[in-house]
Image 1 (tube, rainbow, N blue to C red):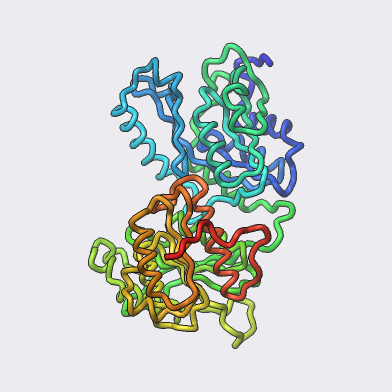
Image 2: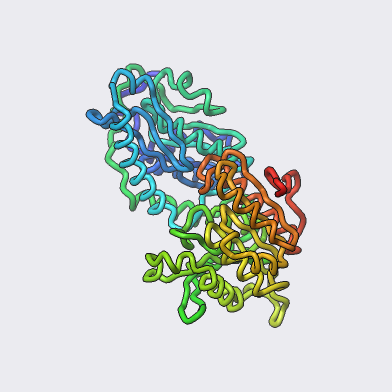
Length: 459
C-alpha cells in the first residue's frame, strides 16, 4: 500500500491511525506493550483506544560498529538476543566487535528498564492477547526480540502492530507473531523517519508521562482494587530497615522476602514473584537485610545469624492485620521467601519462630549455610526451587534437604541457570511459590490447571 513520504504528522497521529485498525482487539484480555522510546507515544494512543493496560518491553538495537543505524541484531529483557545474519555476514563484524556493542547496549537496556519501571514488575501477560507496538519496522530485529519476549512471558496471542513497515515485513516476522498490522507498507523503504513530518527523539520524560497516564486511566473489567503499596521502616537488631509493603484487598496471608548477596528490595526477580503472590491474595514485604553502608562488607553478607536475627525482628514487627481488618483480629499467616544467602536467613528465622511460620520458599538458595542444626529445627513446609543448569546448587540443596524434618520438596526448573534469566523460567518460579504459599498458608486452593511443581527430585 503506497503512502506519501510524510504520511504521519507525528507519533501521536500514527498511534491514532494505527488504533483504528486494531478495534477488533478491544476487550479485557488485551495488553499493549510498547518498545521504548519511540514506540511509547504510538502505543499510548492504541492502549487508550482499546482501554487496555500499557507496558513496555525494553529492546536495544545492536548497530553495526561503523554504521550504528544499521541493525545487526537486538537484545531485550529476559536475556533475549536476536542476530540478523543477513547484515552480520556482509558487514564482516568480528565476535569482539559484536561483544563490545552488546555490552554497551545491555548496560543501557538495564538503565532504561530501571528508569521506566522503577519497583513495578511487568504486567502479567499469561493467557492474554499482547499487542506489540513500535513507531515502525525497518530490519525487524527489535520487533522480533519483543515478540519472543512477550511469548516467553506467556502471551496467548501476539499481535505486532506498527504505523509503517517494508513490503516484505510479513515474510520476515510472520513466524514470531500471530497477526501483523500496519497502516502502510511503502516501497521503496529506506528509513522509518522518512514517513513522519515530525520524527524528533522521544525523551525519557515523555515515556514516563505516558506510562503514568496509562496507569491512572481506569479500564474495563479491572476487578478488585489495586493493592495498597507503601514504604515501611522497621527496627531490627539495632538498625532500622526500609522495605515496601504491598497489601491486596482482602489479603489472606503475608510473605516476607529475604534477599541474597548483591540484591535488595528493588530486585526485578523478586518483584516478579511478589506480583504473582499479590494476585493470589497474599501481601508481600520486600526489604533490605543490610544498610547501604553494610552492603560492601562481604562478612556481613554471609553472616547467617545476623541476617536471620534481622529477618526475625522484622517479621515480628511487621503489621500483619491489613488496613480495614477488625481490631484485634487474627494475624495473617506468615510466609518467608529467601533467595541465595537470604534462603539461609529465612530458614534460620523459621527455626526461631517455629509454628508462627506457615510456609517457606527458597529460590536458587543456599540452605546449607544455615547449618544442620538449624535445618532440623524448621517446622514450616519448605519448597526449595533450583535451576536445572545450576548443578552445584542442586547438589547443595539436595544435601541440605536431608537435614530437614519438616514437609519439603525440591523443585528443579528445567533449562534455568542460577538467576533464572532464561525466558519463562522466572514465571515458573513465581507459579511454584504462589502454589506453595497458597496451599500451606490456608489462603485458598491451588489455581485450577496448575501443576504443583516443575520437576521434583528426591535425594
